[in-house]
Length: 271
Image 1 (tube, rainbow, N blue to C red):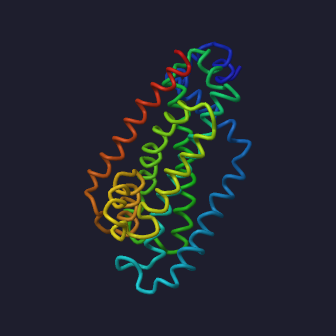
Image 2: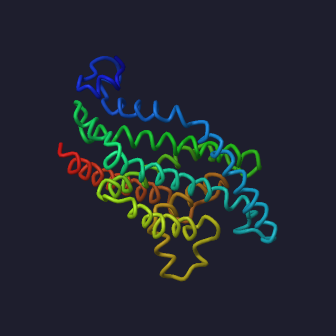
């Protein structure tokens, strides 16, 4: 009997690392399910950055002859696209899969019937989301390297940055998805949060060109802080804000989102 079968049957896993860290059983379940669909994900992970860089970086960049901030338009948008990819993957994996696990396939309730606690279920699923964020962002980073858009050894820190961005985004979205009953609310999240952030958080142009009110909304979003950090890493320049300030801000989103998501999971699962 596998670890997952033991968890589903109510038998606590006792041996190995999974036995000591129950959330790993949930991560294992997610990875087993992903094993059936990973090929399509890998294809889109490479195709999307390639098309985006050709369309925006080269196509639109041809009309931005002077570049942005002293660098070519392609070099300017690449770090923003990497951070935006982390955000979109994190949101996508934290919305319908979470709501579905409560409302449709009820897998969370099956897991809660085992010795797994709400925090274990949440932690294992969040770990899988971070895995998806990392693999998708690494694909984007590889394509960027092939285009010659990485100009600093600090670009090697980008995978760590995208993990932090993913955590800062995924945990509050987990809380939101766990508190709604219809996927109509998830569409609202994309319409009024994800799309505006992707367009106006410094990915395609500097936020300084926005009106003051919109500029401060951009500063409040976790994506802008991630974009600024990734841009500093790939270009080897100083960020607009201090690095500790960015990290603390994203860390606050991650910690606050985790506490809220765990409370929502406990309430929903009644454990």
